[in-house]
Length: 443
Image (cartoon, rainbow, N blue to C red; front, side, top):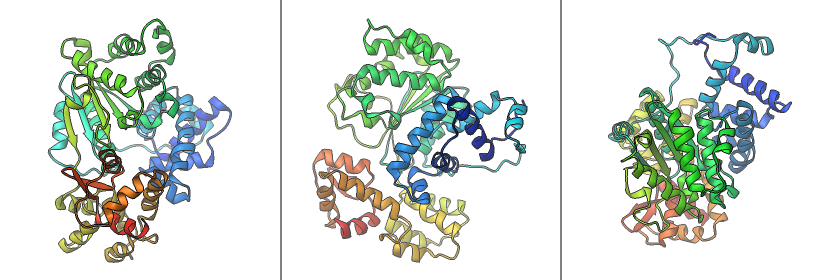
Protein backbone atom coordinates (compact mmCIF):
# COMPACT_ATOMS: atom_id res chain seq x y z
CA UNK A 1 0.00 0.00 0.00
CA UNK A 2 1.04 3.60 -0.38
CA UNK A 3 3.23 4.49 2.62
CA UNK A 4 2.49 8.16 2.02
CA UNK A 5 -1.17 7.85 3.04
CA UNK A 6 -1.72 10.09 6.06
CA UNK A 7 -3.53 8.83 9.11
CA UNK A 8 -6.11 11.55 9.69
CA UNK A 9 -8.91 11.61 12.25
CA UNK A 10 -11.47 10.67 9.57
CA UNK A 11 -9.46 7.56 8.66
CA UNK A 12 -8.78 6.67 12.30
CA UNK A 13 -12.50 6.88 13.09
CA UNK A 14 -13.34 4.58 10.19
CA UNK A 15 -10.59 2.12 11.08
CA UNK A 16 -11.88 1.98 14.66
CA UNK A 17 -15.46 1.40 13.49
CA UNK A 18 -14.42 -1.25 10.99
CA UNK A 19 -12.29 -3.38 13.30
CA UNK A 20 -14.55 -3.05 16.35
CA UNK A 21 -17.58 -3.96 14.23
CA UNK A 22 -15.75 -6.92 12.69
CA UNK A 23 -14.89 -8.15 16.20
CA UNK A 24 -18.12 -7.41 18.09
CA UNK A 25 -20.85 -6.75 15.53
CA UNK A 26 -21.30 -3.26 17.01
CA UNK A 27 -19.74 0.12 16.41
CA UNK A 28 -18.17 2.33 19.08
CA UNK A 29 -20.69 4.28 21.12
CA UNK A 30 -21.03 8.03 20.67
CA UNK A 31 -19.33 8.66 24.01
CA UNK A 32 -16.45 6.32 23.18
CA UNK A 33 -15.96 8.19 19.89
CA UNK A 34 -15.87 11.48 21.80
CA UNK A 35 -13.16 10.07 24.08
CA UNK A 36 -11.19 8.79 21.09
CA UNK A 37 -11.48 12.10 19.24
CA UNK A 38 -10.49 14.02 22.36
CA UNK A 39 -7.42 11.80 22.76
CA UNK A 40 -6.67 12.27 19.06
CA UNK A 41 -6.68 16.04 19.60
CA UNK A 42 -4.23 15.68 22.49
CA UNK A 43 -6.75 16.44 25.23
CA UNK A 44 -6.58 15.09 28.76
CA UNK A 45 -9.45 13.10 30.23
CA UNK A 46 -10.23 16.18 32.30
CA UNK A 47 -10.53 18.39 29.23
CA UNK A 48 -12.68 15.82 27.41
CA UNK A 49 -14.96 15.60 30.44
CA UNK A 50 -15.29 19.37 30.64
CA UNK A 51 -16.09 19.69 26.93
CA UNK A 52 -18.91 17.15 27.05
CA UNK A 53 -20.12 17.81 30.60
CA UNK A 54 -19.08 14.46 32.10
CA UNK A 55 -17.07 13.76 35.23
CA UNK A 56 -13.40 12.96 34.70
CA UNK A 57 -13.75 9.65 36.54
CA UNK A 58 -16.55 8.61 34.18
CA UNK A 59 -14.53 9.49 31.08
CA UNK A 60 -11.31 7.86 32.32
CA UNK A 61 -12.86 4.89 34.09
CA UNK A 62 -16.04 3.73 32.42
CA UNK A 63 -15.92 5.03 28.85
CA UNK A 64 -12.15 5.27 28.48
CA UNK A 65 -11.52 1.78 29.83
CA UNK A 66 -14.23 0.32 27.55
CA UNK A 67 -12.82 2.14 24.54
CA UNK A 68 -9.24 0.91 24.95
CA UNK A 69 -10.40 -2.60 25.81
CA UNK A 70 -12.54 -2.79 22.64
CA UNK A 71 -9.75 -1.44 20.46
CA UNK A 72 -7.19 -3.81 22.04
CA UNK A 73 -9.40 -6.82 21.33
CA UNK A 74 -10.28 -5.62 17.82
CA UNK A 75 -6.69 -4.74 16.84
CA UNK A 76 -5.12 -7.80 18.45
CA UNK A 77 -2.64 -5.71 20.44
CA UNK A 78 -2.68 -3.57 23.53
CA UNK A 79 -4.14 -0.14 22.70
CA UNK A 80 -4.10 2.70 25.22
CA UNK A 81 -4.37 6.48 25.33
CA UNK A 82 -0.59 6.65 25.06
CA UNK A 83 0.03 4.37 22.11
CA UNK A 84 -3.20 4.40 20.09
CA UNK A 85 -1.79 6.52 17.24
CA UNK A 86 1.01 4.02 16.65
CA UNK A 87 -1.47 1.14 16.85
CA UNK A 88 -3.69 2.84 14.26
CA UNK A 89 -0.71 3.46 12.00
CA UNK A 90 0.27 -0.19 12.17
CA UNK A 91 -3.28 -1.23 11.36
CA UNK A 92 -3.45 1.21 8.44
CA UNK A 93 -0.17 -0.12 7.04
CA UNK A 94 -1.50 -3.69 7.13
CA UNK A 95 -4.91 -2.78 5.73
CA UNK A 96 -5.30 -2.93 1.95
CA UNK A 97 -6.23 0.55 0.78
CA UNK A 98 -8.94 -0.64 -1.61
CA UNK A 99 -10.62 -2.65 1.13
CA UNK A 100 -10.95 0.45 3.27
CA UNK A 101 -12.13 2.54 0.34
CA UNK A 102 -14.76 -0.01 -0.65
CA UNK A 103 -16.16 -0.27 2.87
CA UNK A 104 -15.68 3.32 3.90
CA UNK A 105 -15.37 5.69 0.91
CA UNK A 106 -13.03 8.49 1.84
CA UNK A 107 -10.48 10.71 0.15
CA UNK A 108 -7.08 9.88 1.61
CA UNK A 109 -4.95 13.01 1.82
CA UNK A 110 -1.29 12.51 0.95
CA UNK A 111 1.26 13.52 3.54
CA UNK A 112 3.82 16.00 2.30
CA UNK A 113 6.78 15.15 4.46
CA UNK A 114 8.61 18.30 3.47
CA UNK A 115 5.82 20.60 4.63
CA UNK A 116 4.31 18.55 7.45
CA UNK A 117 3.33 20.97 10.23
CA UNK A 118 1.63 18.76 12.83
CA UNK A 119 3.56 19.16 16.05
CA UNK A 120 3.19 18.37 19.71
CA UNK A 121 3.87 21.21 22.10
CA UNK A 122 7.01 20.35 24.01
CA UNK A 123 9.03 22.85 25.98
CA UNK A 124 12.48 21.54 26.84
CA UNK A 125 13.82 21.77 30.37
CA UNK A 126 17.59 21.36 29.86
CA UNK A 127 19.58 19.34 30.66
CA UNK A 128 16.86 16.75 31.35
CA UNK A 129 16.29 15.75 27.72
CA UNK A 130 19.96 15.25 26.88
CA UNK A 131 20.49 13.21 30.08
CA UNK A 132 17.59 10.92 29.16
CA UNK A 133 18.77 10.54 25.55
CA UNK A 134 22.26 9.55 26.68
CA UNK A 135 21.01 7.21 29.38
CA UNK A 136 18.84 5.02 27.14
CA UNK A 137 21.89 4.38 24.98
CA UNK A 138 23.54 2.63 27.92
CA UNK A 139 23.01 -1.17 28.16
CA UNK A 140 20.67 -2.18 30.98
CA UNK A 141 19.99 1.45 31.93
CA UNK A 142 17.23 2.68 34.23
CA UNK A 143 15.62 6.14 34.27
CA UNK A 144 13.44 7.19 37.21
CA UNK A 145 11.11 10.11 36.44
CA UNK A 146 9.33 11.76 39.36
CA UNK A 147 6.93 14.70 39.33
CA UNK A 148 3.42 15.48 40.58
CA UNK A 149 0.40 15.06 38.34
CA UNK A 150 0.18 17.33 35.26
CA UNK A 151 3.82 18.40 35.35
CA UNK A 152 4.72 16.91 31.97
CA UNK A 153 5.85 13.36 32.78
CA UNK A 154 3.85 11.93 29.88
CA UNK A 155 5.36 14.40 27.41
CA UNK A 156 8.88 13.53 28.59
CA UNK A 157 8.31 9.77 28.45
CA UNK A 158 6.83 10.08 24.96
CA UNK A 159 9.92 12.06 24.00
CA UNK A 160 12.17 9.29 25.36
CA UNK A 161 10.23 6.63 23.46
CA UNK A 162 10.46 8.66 20.25
CA UNK A 163 14.20 9.02 20.74
CA UNK A 164 14.41 5.27 21.23
CA UNK A 165 12.68 4.73 17.89
CA UNK A 166 15.15 7.09 16.22
CA UNK A 167 17.94 4.93 17.64
CA UNK A 168 16.25 1.91 15.99
CA UNK A 169 15.14 0.55 19.37
CA UNK A 170 11.81 -1.12 19.98
CA UNK A 171 9.57 0.51 22.55
CA UNK A 172 6.76 -0.51 24.88
CA UNK A 173 4.70 1.49 27.35
CA UNK A 174 2.73 0.02 30.25
CA UNK A 175 0.47 2.25 32.36
CA UNK A 176 -0.61 0.84 35.71
CA UNK A 177 -3.74 2.99 35.41
CA UNK A 178 -4.91 0.40 32.88
CA UNK A 179 -4.85 -2.38 35.48
CA UNK A 180 -7.95 -3.27 37.48
CA UNK A 181 -7.85 -3.18 41.26
CA UNK A 182 -8.11 -6.96 41.26
CA UNK A 183 -4.88 -7.20 39.28
CA UNK A 184 -2.99 -5.71 42.22
CA UNK A 185 -4.34 -8.23 44.72
CA UNK A 186 -2.38 -11.23 43.46
CA UNK A 187 1.22 -11.29 42.21
CA UNK A 188 0.62 -14.04 39.65
CA UNK A 189 -2.38 -12.21 38.19
CA UNK A 190 -0.50 -8.91 38.09
CA UNK A 191 2.61 -10.33 36.42
CA UNK A 192 0.47 -12.09 33.80
CA UNK A 193 -1.26 -8.76 33.12
CA UNK A 194 2.11 -7.02 32.92
CA UNK A 195 3.65 -9.60 30.57
CA UNK A 196 0.55 -9.64 28.39
CA UNK A 197 0.75 -5.86 28.06
CA UNK A 198 4.41 -5.87 27.03
CA UNK A 199 3.70 -8.73 24.64
CA UNK A 200 0.92 -6.75 22.98
CA UNK A 201 3.29 -3.82 22.51
CA UNK A 202 5.77 -6.11 20.74
CA UNK A 203 3.09 -7.94 18.74
CA UNK A 204 3.70 -11.24 20.52
CA UNK A 205 0.54 -13.41 20.40
CA UNK A 206 -1.04 -13.80 23.85
CA UNK A 207 -1.09 -17.57 23.37
CA UNK A 208 2.72 -17.53 23.75
CA UNK A 209 2.32 -16.24 27.29
CA UNK A 210 -0.09 -19.02 28.22
CA UNK A 211 2.23 -21.64 26.75
CA UNK A 212 5.33 -20.33 28.52
CA UNK A 213 3.75 -19.92 31.98
CA UNK A 214 4.61 -23.00 34.08
CA UNK A 215 2.39 -23.44 37.13
CA UNK A 216 5.18 -25.28 38.93
CA UNK A 217 7.45 -22.22 38.86
CA UNK A 218 6.98 -19.03 40.88
CA UNK A 219 5.32 -16.03 39.24
CA UNK A 220 8.57 -14.06 39.22
CA UNK A 221 10.45 -16.92 37.59
CA UNK A 222 7.72 -17.25 34.95
CA UNK A 223 7.85 -13.52 34.26
CA UNK A 224 11.64 -13.58 33.88
CA UNK A 225 11.53 -16.63 31.59
CA UNK A 226 8.87 -14.97 29.43
CA UNK A 227 11.16 -11.98 28.93
CA UNK A 228 14.23 -14.17 28.33
CA UNK A 229 12.62 -16.62 25.91
CA UNK A 230 9.73 -14.77 24.26
CA UNK A 231 10.38 -11.01 24.35
CA UNK A 232 14.04 -10.03 24.50
CA UNK A 233 15.16 -12.49 21.75
CA UNK A 234 12.59 -10.79 19.51
CA UNK A 235 14.37 -7.44 20.04
CA UNK A 236 17.12 -6.64 17.55
CA UNK A 237 18.89 -3.72 19.21
CA UNK A 238 17.24 -2.71 22.48
CA UNK A 239 13.86 -2.42 24.16
CA UNK A 240 12.87 0.82 25.90
CA UNK A 241 10.17 -0.21 28.37
CA UNK A 242 8.28 2.60 30.12
CA UNK A 243 6.23 1.75 33.23
CA UNK A 244 3.99 4.69 34.05
CA UNK A 245 2.20 5.41 37.34
CA UNK A 246 4.31 2.79 39.08
CA UNK A 247 3.37 4.33 42.44
CA UNK A 248 -0.14 2.86 42.06
CA UNK A 249 1.32 -0.45 43.20
CA UNK A 250 2.82 0.98 46.41
CA UNK A 251 -0.19 0.33 48.71
CA UNK A 252 -0.38 -3.36 47.78
CA UNK A 253 1.55 -6.30 49.30
CA UNK A 254 2.81 -7.34 45.84
CA UNK A 255 4.78 -4.08 45.49
CA UNK A 256 7.93 -5.40 47.14
CA UNK A 257 8.06 -8.43 44.83
CA UNK A 258 7.43 -6.49 41.62
CA UNK A 259 9.81 -3.65 42.42
CA UNK A 260 12.44 -6.17 43.50
CA UNK A 261 11.99 -7.94 40.17
CA UNK A 262 12.71 -4.72 38.27
CA UNK A 263 15.85 -4.17 40.36
CA UNK A 264 17.01 -7.73 39.67
CA UNK A 265 16.63 -7.20 35.91
CA UNK A 266 18.73 -4.04 36.16
CA UNK A 267 21.43 -5.93 38.06
CA UNK A 268 21.27 -8.94 35.72
CA UNK A 269 22.03 -6.63 32.79
CA UNK A 270 25.50 -6.07 34.26
CA UNK A 271 26.45 -9.69 33.59
CA UNK A 272 24.09 -11.10 30.94
CA UNK A 273 24.14 -9.74 27.38
CA UNK A 274 20.49 -10.56 26.71
CA UNK A 275 19.33 -8.31 29.55
CA UNK A 276 21.56 -5.48 28.37
CA UNK A 277 18.90 -4.93 25.69
CA UNK A 278 16.39 -3.76 28.30
CA UNK A 279 16.27 -0.04 29.07
CA UNK A 280 13.75 0.70 31.84
CA UNK A 281 11.91 3.99 32.39
CA UNK A 282 9.80 4.08 35.55
CA UNK A 283 7.49 7.03 36.19
CA UNK A 284 5.89 8.01 39.48
CA UNK A 285 4.12 10.97 41.09
CA UNK A 286 5.14 10.52 44.70
CA UNK A 287 8.03 9.52 46.89
CA UNK A 288 8.58 5.84 47.66
CA UNK A 289 6.83 5.70 51.03
CA UNK A 290 6.94 1.91 51.46
CA UNK A 291 9.86 0.13 53.17
CA UNK A 292 12.06 -1.61 50.63
CA UNK A 293 15.30 -3.53 51.09
CA UNK A 294 18.02 -1.18 49.85
CA UNK A 295 19.38 -4.00 47.68
CA UNK A 296 15.97 -4.78 46.16
CA UNK A 297 14.74 -1.31 45.32
CA UNK A 298 14.86 0.18 41.81
CA UNK A 299 14.62 3.66 43.34
CA UNK A 300 18.21 3.98 44.52
CA UNK A 301 19.87 3.01 41.23
CA UNK A 302 19.80 4.37 37.73
CA UNK A 303 19.33 7.99 36.61
CA UNK A 304 16.89 10.06 38.73
CA UNK A 305 14.93 12.77 36.90
CA UNK A 306 12.71 15.22 38.78
CA UNK A 307 10.73 17.60 36.59
CA UNK A 308 10.90 21.23 37.71
CA UNK A 309 8.36 23.93 36.92
CA UNK A 310 8.93 26.16 33.89
CA UNK A 311 11.18 29.15 34.35
CA UNK A 312 10.35 32.57 32.85
CA UNK A 313 12.22 31.81 29.61
CA UNK A 314 10.25 28.60 29.13
CA UNK A 315 6.98 30.43 29.86
CA UNK A 316 7.91 32.92 27.11
CA UNK A 317 8.57 30.03 24.69
CA UNK A 318 5.20 28.49 25.46
CA UNK A 319 3.50 31.85 24.89
CA UNK A 320 5.31 32.26 21.57
CA UNK A 321 4.07 28.84 20.46
CA UNK A 322 0.55 30.21 20.88
CA UNK A 323 1.58 33.36 19.01
CA UNK A 324 1.12 35.50 22.12
CA UNK A 325 3.46 38.40 22.75
CA UNK A 326 3.40 38.62 26.54
CA UNK A 327 5.26 41.45 28.20
CA UNK A 328 7.54 40.77 31.17
CA UNK A 329 4.95 42.23 33.55
CA UNK A 330 2.25 39.92 32.16
CA UNK A 331 4.49 36.88 32.59
CA UNK A 332 5.10 37.92 36.20
CA UNK A 333 1.37 38.45 36.73
CA UNK A 334 0.69 34.98 35.36
CA UNK A 335 3.43 33.16 37.27
CA UNK A 336 2.53 34.94 40.51
CA UNK A 337 -0.77 33.06 40.37
CA UNK A 338 0.08 29.69 38.84
CA UNK A 339 3.87 29.54 39.21
CA UNK A 340 5.66 27.61 36.48
CA UNK A 341 3.07 24.82 36.45
CA UNK A 342 3.04 23.49 32.84
CA UNK A 343 -0.62 22.41 32.78
CA UNK A 344 -1.95 25.60 34.36
CA UNK A 345 0.16 27.77 32.06
CA UNK A 346 -0.83 25.87 28.93
CA UNK A 347 -4.51 26.13 29.90
CA UNK A 348 -4.53 29.91 30.14
CA UNK A 349 -2.29 30.53 27.12
CA UNK A 350 -4.26 28.22 24.83
CA UNK A 351 -7.47 29.91 26.00
CA UNK A 352 -6.07 33.34 25.17
CA UNK A 353 -5.03 32.11 21.73
CA UNK A 354 -8.50 30.79 20.99
CA UNK A 355 -10.47 33.63 22.62
CA UNK A 356 -8.77 36.78 21.42
CA UNK A 357 -11.41 39.05 22.98
CA UNK A 358 -10.36 37.90 26.45
CA UNK A 359 -7.55 39.52 28.39
CA UNK A 360 -5.02 37.92 30.70
CA UNK A 361 -6.10 40.15 33.59
CA UNK A 362 -9.72 39.08 33.24
CA UNK A 363 -8.81 35.40 33.16
CA UNK A 364 -6.54 35.63 36.19
CA UNK A 365 -9.13 37.57 38.19
CA UNK A 366 -11.72 34.81 37.74
CA UNK A 367 -9.21 31.93 37.87
CA UNK A 368 -9.67 30.99 41.58
CA UNK A 369 -13.48 30.88 41.21
CA UNK A 370 -15.96 28.43 39.74
CA UNK A 371 -16.50 30.90 36.89
CA UNK A 372 -12.86 30.65 35.81
CA UNK A 373 -11.11 28.54 33.21
CA UNK A 374 -9.71 26.17 35.87
CA UNK A 375 -13.11 25.29 37.38
CA UNK A 376 -13.12 21.67 36.20
CA UNK A 377 -9.54 21.07 37.36
CA UNK A 378 -10.12 22.71 40.75
CA UNK A 379 -13.43 20.94 41.33
CA UNK A 380 -11.78 17.61 40.51
CA UNK A 381 -9.07 18.26 43.09
CA UNK A 382 -11.70 19.29 45.65
CA UNK A 383 -13.64 16.09 44.99
CA UNK A 384 -10.46 14.07 45.53
CA UNK A 385 -9.83 15.78 48.86
CA UNK A 386 -13.39 15.18 49.98
CA UNK A 387 -13.14 11.52 48.98
CA UNK A 388 -10.06 11.11 51.21
CA UNK A 389 -10.97 12.48 54.66
CA UNK A 390 -7.39 12.30 55.91
CA UNK A 391 -6.16 14.66 53.17
CA UNK A 392 -8.72 17.42 53.57
CA UNK A 393 -7.74 18.66 57.07
CA UNK A 394 -4.05 18.29 56.21
CA UNK A 395 -4.32 20.53 53.15
CA UNK A 396 -6.56 22.96 55.03
CA UNK A 397 -3.70 23.39 57.49
CA UNK A 398 -1.38 24.18 54.57
CA UNK A 399 -3.55 26.84 52.88
CA UNK A 400 -4.63 28.64 56.03
CA UNK A 401 -1.18 30.03 56.87
CA UNK A 402 1.52 31.86 54.95
CA UNK A 403 4.42 29.98 56.51
CA UNK A 404 5.85 26.56 55.75
CA UNK A 405 3.85 23.74 57.38
CA UNK A 406 4.96 20.36 58.65
CA UNK A 407 2.47 17.53 58.24
CA UNK A 408 2.56 13.72 58.39
CA UNK A 409 5.00 12.22 55.87
CA UNK A 410 2.46 9.94 54.16
CA UNK A 411 -0.02 12.82 53.78
CA UNK A 412 2.81 14.95 52.38
CA UNK A 413 3.55 12.32 49.72
CA UNK A 414 -0.11 12.04 48.73
CA UNK A 415 -0.66 15.80 48.50
CA UNK A 416 2.57 16.12 46.51
CA UNK A 417 1.40 13.38 44.15
CA UNK A 418 -1.81 15.33 43.48
CA UNK A 419 0.33 18.38 42.71
CA UNK A 420 -1.20 20.40 45.55
CA UNK A 421 1.98 21.14 47.50
CA UNK A 422 5.65 21.89 47.04
CA UNK A 423 8.28 20.34 49.28
CA UNK A 424 10.55 22.70 51.21
CA UNK A 425 12.85 20.47 53.19
CA UNK A 426 10.58 18.55 55.57
CA UNK A 427 7.82 21.16 55.22
CA UNK A 428 5.26 22.00 52.52
CA UNK A 429 3.56 25.03 50.96
CA UNK A 430 0.75 25.23 48.41
CA UNK A 431 1.95 24.45 44.88
CA UNK A 432 0.76 27.89 43.70
CA UNK A 433 -1.25 30.91 44.77
CA UNK A 434 -4.21 29.72 42.67
CA UNK A 435 -4.58 26.68 44.91
CA UNK A 436 -4.18 28.71 48.09
CA UNK A 437 -6.94 31.14 47.10
CA UNK A 438 -9.39 28.54 45.79
CA UNK A 439 -9.09 26.08 48.67
CA UNK A 440 -8.86 28.78 51.36
CA UNK A 441 -12.47 29.65 50.51
CA UNK A 442 -13.65 26.03 50.47
CA UNK A 443 -11.81 24.20 53.21
